[in-house]
Structures are given as structure tokens and as C-alpha cells.
Image (cartoon, rainbow, N blue to C red):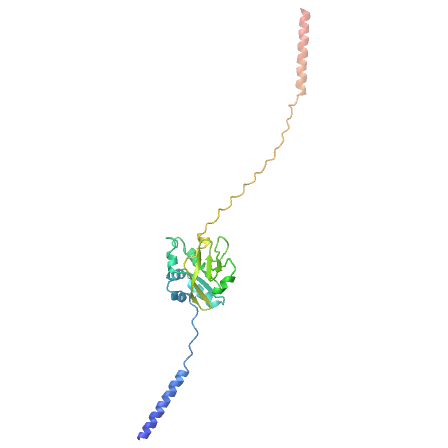
Amino acid sequence: MTAMNRFLCNFYCMLFLAFAIRTAVGQSPAPGPAGPPNVTAALEKGGQFSTLIRLMQGSQLTSQIDGQLNDTNNGITIFAPSDSAFAALPPGTLNSLNQQQKSSLIQFHIIPSYIGRSQFQTVSNPLRTQAGDSGPYAYPINITTSGGTVNISTGVDNTTVSGTVHDDGQLIVYQIDKVLLPMGLFGTKPPAPAPAPAQSKKKKSSAVTARPPSVDASGDMGLRENVVMALVGAAVGVLWL
């Protein structure tokens, strides 16, 4: 093979190799869309929510929240207490709750809709949470704003939003520095009203009519006859004298 032939052979091989590489690169799949929202990953990104993550996983709320994010377009808002917020609770607070109550406590920190920071000014109080009933002695939460501060009140304690941990337009996580304590678990309920006294039934008084003793007519006549006989006997006795 002459030098020219070798040159042409190498040239065409390199040209074919470059074309093949370019074709392979051009046909590589485009990067797929971002994965579904994941609440655990969002909280782990914050780096100080290990207690909240543990409680959510223990109550199987992480899978429930992820399912809601994937099945609806309403979004979810989470008020996430930091580890220091849980550590500030009175000793034994969490241990005094059963599993259902712990689940209700965590769901009390979750709003089943996306609420951006600017939307807090127009929310209707009391705001309904995942815990359910927002009655005065159940799970009410009230949010007010003052300037740039977002205040949260439960009727038992108060706190403010200290920052945004995660926001993807569907899931938004706000950091709070106190655990929200619901009235339904930690509030003092008013004493139950005393039952109304039972109305006594008045007995109907039956009037008793006194009846005079009956007079035996035959007995009265016998008495009179005895008196007359005694008088007659006395008179006869006087005559004999």
C-alpha cells in the first residue's frame, strides 16, 4: 500500500469515527424532568429537621404527603419546627402522646394547599390543617402578618416564620422555632356545664272528705227504749213505797 493510500484510509477512518461519535451524541436522550416532590429530601436539605423527619416517618406521613403532591395540584405548606424547637419542649411532652396523637401533632403543622409568603396576608382564619377540625377546642391555627413578619397562633402558643427552607411552587417549607401546640392536645378545656336539675313531679293531692260516722238507727231506738223502761221501773218502785 502506497503512502497515499494509507493516508486516504486513515483519513476516511477518522472521518467515519467522528461522524459516528457526533451521531451518538446527537441521539442521546434529553435529560428527563425533575423527580416528583419529596418532602424528606426537602427537609434534609435544611439540615436541622431530623426530629421532624423521624416523627413524620414514624407516622407514615412522608408517603402520604408525597402521594398528595403527586396526585393533586393544590400543593402543600409545611411549618417545620427545627430540632432546637423540639428540644425546647418540656421534658416528656412527646413521650406523653400515643402514636395517633403524635400523628395529629405533626399534621397540625401541615396545610393541604400551597401558600406563598405573600398569600399569608389574605388567608381566612382559622386556617384548616391536615389535623382536621379547626373548632375552638380542637386544632385551630391563626395566621396574621405585621410588616414582613408572619405570626402563627394556636391558642396555646405563638411563633413566627423565621425563613423558607424549600419552595418549588408545589411544596413550600417554612422554618419555625417553636413547636405548634394544638388546643385539642394541650389546651385547657372549660368545665362541662352542670346538668340541669330534674324537675320533680308534683303528686296530685287527693282531697280526703271526712265522713261523719254513720248512725245506726236500730241502735238508737234500742237505747231510747232502755231509758224509758228504766224510768217506768223507777216510778213503779216509788208507788210501792
